[in-house]
Image (cartoon, rainbow, N blue to C red; front, top):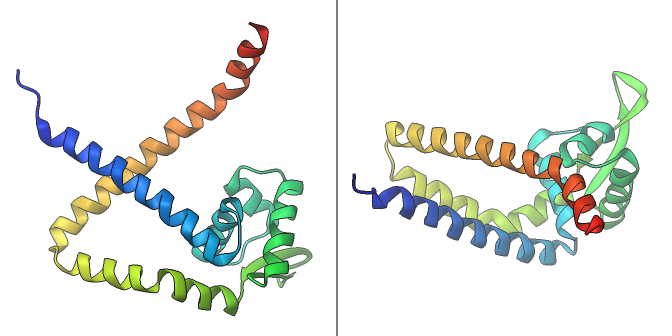
Length: 162
């Protein structure tokens, strides 16, 4: 049976897109004056809305102590603020600021508008297929990252033993 070339081309396209996203992440971090970990935290906060620091730590895969350091840097840069949780005054919530919205528009505004224009050229049925593929590819990638992460300690231990 002959191998289909199109799946390989799609995988190649995903790898090329990943490289460009990686390059964009670094360029954006430079424009924000942040490191990429701080940018990831800011992205999560922007998408998920106000979060408790513990929830953010879990989403980043950090300890609460580690996320405190990230939040301190983001707060000092003016990109987040901490406020009491109205439902539980003992807890804090972290949210992005107007400075973040302004920087987001400066850095990503043209890309967002261009992406919307690009998507306008697809039918709803095509967009459903694209969305399904992206969701499934993200889940597959996340599961693989989790599997790799669970083996890091055992492989690092093996490397030290040799």
